[in-house]
Each structure stands twice: as C-alpha cells, then as structure tokens.
Length: 232
Image (tube, rainbow, N blue to C red; front, side, top):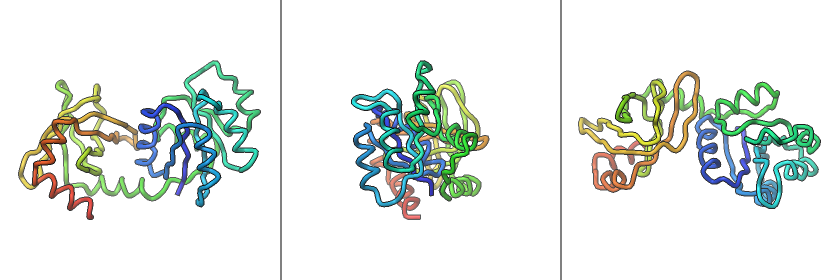
C-alpha cells in the first residue's frame, strides 16, 4: 500500500487532496507544517513512500523541508506549487524528486508518478471501488438546477456521500440529490468537497448541508440503510 505524507498550511486544499488520493487507493497522512511533518516521519512505524509538500509555508519552506528529509531518510520528496517563479534548480539542489503544479488530483498525481518513474504503489482499495461501482445497485440522481446526472453510490454516512458520476457536470459546488431507499424517495442538498477522475468517470465527495443533515437524522429509512451498508 502506498503511504503518502501531505504537507500544506492550506487546510481546505489539504483535505480535498487527501480525499482524492484516498479514493484512488493511497494511504494518506497529513501535516499542517514542516515541523509536524518531521515529527511524523521520526515517530511513524510504517515507512512513508513519498512526501508531497507545499513550497511556500510559514517557518520552513518546502525545499528546506526536503533537505531535512533527504539528509536523514531516503524518502522521495515532491514539491507542490502554483508559483511559476520558483527556481527548479534551487529545488533540485535540495534533493527533491519532482515538482507538481497545484491544484491537482489523484489522476494527475498517478500520471506524475508514472512520468517521473517514482515507485509508489496504489492499494487494492482502488480496484475494490471499481468493482463496487460495476456491481452497484444503488443509484442516485444529482441536479444543479440546469443539468441532471446520475451516478453510483460509493459510500454514505450521516454527514455525506461518495458518488461515481456517469459524466461530469458544471457547476457542481452545491447539488440537489434524489435517491430511492426501499421504494422511498430521499432527497436533499449537499456541497462538493472533492473530485477526482478515475478512468472515464468522475468520483466526487459531498457533505450534506445543515438542513439536509437534520432531516436525514430523523429519517428511519435512511439511517437503516446507512447502518446496513457500513456494517457490510
């Protein structure tokens, strides 16, 4: 299983990228700064296969973190940056294994690994998700008010849902969903938190809005369905 450590002081980006990579089958750890990243590397029992770190962070830049990691371990370090003014020469002198432009998702990262000959395995989770999509019997309908798309449910909790869409849809920041549970229609609204292309289909994770969460917490059919699927 490929274990990644993501280091970035932007919490929203960190959460989004983590969700995308986990869906693709990576085992992901996160750190909000370089010092926490070094602490994790020092104390973790299982080896980390790759560190992805932002370049511009308070207290310690990404190239400085890369130098500290490479000085003590053999872990490859990839710099994440959206700043075109960053000197590639300076970065590679620090011992980095590559530079990937922000923003990116799991699909871009897997292609990056392939192009840069970095050996980070993807776990069986990705294969399992694909199998689950192919065998899925639970469908969901999503609409943004102008367009409607259907998809397969990957997972669901009281707080949100993971979906594999038949095709992409824009915008998809806030969507209404409709699904059938034992012949009962369940619907509400949710906000997109991450998305990642896997093959030709789009996987996305959503968080129910506050009113929908409250409504679903009183829906016995929904609660029963979630409990059964979590147990399985």
